[in-house]
Image (tube, one colour):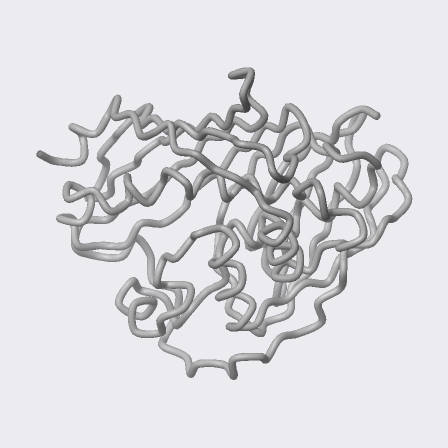
Length: 284
């Protein structure tokens, strides 16, 4: 069996419950607003839905046999309502498409998170890149591990005024320590070793441990959600991962309002855009 045989594979439905304690841990790990998110999860915790089912895919023998690293290429999330605590959710995953080009497998994976009425509250599409035997890209020479609690400026996502069309949003400084990455992994179940084990990251072609891509997505969601009231402030977000962020390195969420409640966003660090995104806020 090779990776192409996974096309059409269904995973789940898998049960998922977002307890207030889990929400609190996630909010702390990502620097979100604890006064806002207690009985409802912030939009970024849709990552917990993805990692309720993705580990079964990424640990499949056909993928493990490739011997390389799985890298997140793009991510789409659509939110159809609030992510309430104490509700019993179910998550279903499906491998929609598998392609192979220049030694790299491209695996498109869709998720659907539903409640007791079987209506989706979160839908998502992930593009994973899996390189056979070699990492997909080299990101510089090996660097020393930062101290566990070292981080740059990390501002909490407190409410801010909605800018006019064509205007920039207030910049949101963000950074994560290695300890933050462990807390994030515990809240989302995203235990990919490149985010906590130095040697695994180096063997994957990275300079060392890197911040979870979806933790960075959480920051970008915060950049827009703080501008919009309500328990379900976002409608849709598409994110393209370009370069990883190292723990302790300062970054900024930047962006501008386009048309209506649309936003063009980026996560920037050291003069480069690490992630670019388009995010649509929900109408009040």
